[in-house]
Image 1 (cartoon, one colour):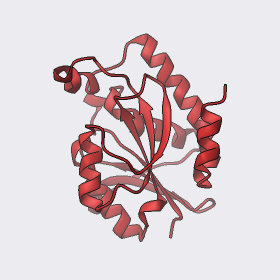
Image 2: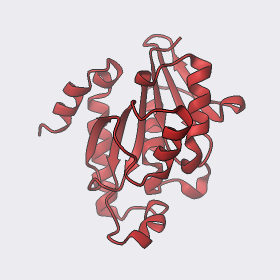
Image 3: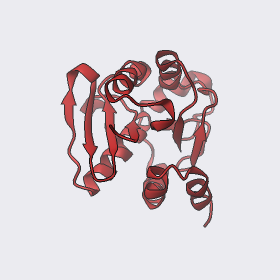
Length: 188
């Protein structure tokens, strides 16, 4: 049984590669690649998963669209006998500037339909989240196009730097040292 489950939220398919909504998924895939971790598709879980026995971590990329992510996460929790405090979900966040990172336990969905679906399907908001900023387009009517669009070069550079900062606190996250990770993220 894994002590921790890392979940990267994003849409499936090449059409969505590099979009703002896929930041959580892409960060987790990038980190997994740096550690030579390979995923395999598990249809019954609606996700690509892998586990690392040496550090007792389950890695998961839901294979459904962001707004329906809760179904996969619910199945992963049941299959792996996890508690909600064993989850760390990586996702995009409109309320944070591009590349800004916040670690949060609980809270609302902030208009993120994927988080709202997760809350409904697993029956709680009490899990850890790594919020990765994508900025806001300014107008509510532009949000869908914004999250499904690709960032400009300046924002892309900021997001790349966020990947590096997240990687620097990865061990702290895996040891559930969230306060220390948050402090390190905000110390220049």
